Image (cartoon, rainbow, N blue to C red; front, side, top):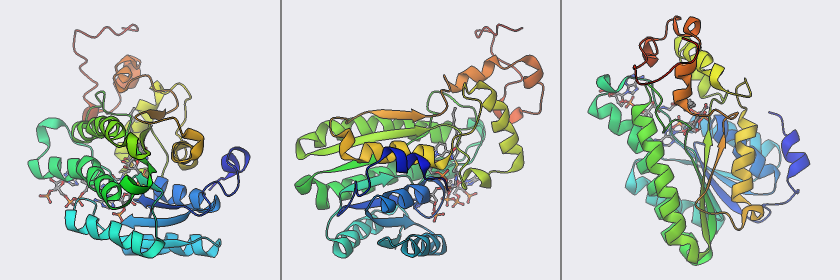
Length: 293
Ligand SMILES: CCCCCCC/C=C/C(=O)SCCNC(=O)CCNC(=O)[C@H](O)C(C)(C)COP(=O)(O)OP(=O)(O)OC[C@H]1O[C@@H](n2cnc3c(N)ncnc32)[C@H](O)[C@@H]1OP(=O)(O)O
Ligand SMILES: NC(=O)C1=CN([C@@H]2O[C@H](COP(=O)(O)OP(=O)(O)OC[C@H]3O[C@@H](n4cnc5c(N)ncnc54)[C@H](OP(=O)(O)O)[C@@H]3O)[C@@H](O)[C@H]2O)C=CC1
């Protein structure tokens, strides 16, 4: 994991004395963010469903001299989330930051999504973030202030096979703005980071066929490469920090400049002729003009 961005941009000890909760801290972007926050002096509380993943990251951070606690919790479980936040306060004595990073989805066209699947994804990417935010606010930040960063995804504007997740991420963006309005007077900032295609360990778990589809979508990304976990966590760390003290209700896209998922319609016909049924690019609607046809 490269830390060059951090060493050159962020002041050592920036988060000294602070405690930050990172949901989904057992892998990928969450793991990377937890490492970087620890390197900058924070105590971190890692949240996830699988204890082995959390224990592995805990061992890494402790080996580097950091302070870390782990909390097994499904963020969709209201009693579990209440207990999680109380436990973090009991163990660390404070909560300065929250990174709502846990989430994910599976690709499926809207017509095939079951209610159970829809609810699993919406609860993972919207309801869970709401629950953790609400508990962190009411149990600690309302009285003490703090900073919350919600990880959404750059897919709310219409990305085939991501209907459930895109809807949830759009909801999280709206929640971000509302919570920022309601909680500003308590000194609580709420912002979001929207990654595009990031070569995280979680991303690697997608099936090769899906990754092949992503690599075609990559053609619409101006910077022409995947992002890294460290590049996403740099935006998270910035928004969490005092450097962003006058920023709330905002979001930062970390996506290589992708103009809009719909831009993928403009891929050359030769690209579209590749197996791509999951994204239904073979038959663009007539209302969309495609320059190169
Ligand atoms: C320009 C735009 C750029 C955007 C790029 C976006 C790229 C995004 C990348 C990433 O997000 S990388 C991170 C990826 N990591 C993950 O997604 C991992 C986490 N994912 C999950 O945990 C699941 O996908 C979940 C649905 C979010 C949570 O699942 P849960 O544990 O609740 O699932 P189950 O109990 O197994 O299933 C519940 C229900 O959900 C449906 N379902 C789940 N998985 C699938 C699947 N692979 N295919 C079809 N349906 C699925 C299903 O209805 C399940 O019901 P039953 O089948 O059990 O009746
Ligand atoms: N990589 C990418 O290209 C992009 C990623 N994102 C989003 O960024 C976030 C991090 O993704 P990334 O690091 O790539 O992927 P990972 O799959 O590595 O990370 C997701 C983490 O969330 C945890 N998690 C998932 N659901 C729950 C839940 N219900 N309760 C508690 N923990 C949960 C998982 O842990 P466990 O298995 O222990 O539950 C896992 O550690 C996700 O929300 C993802 O959707 C957004 C856009 C693009």
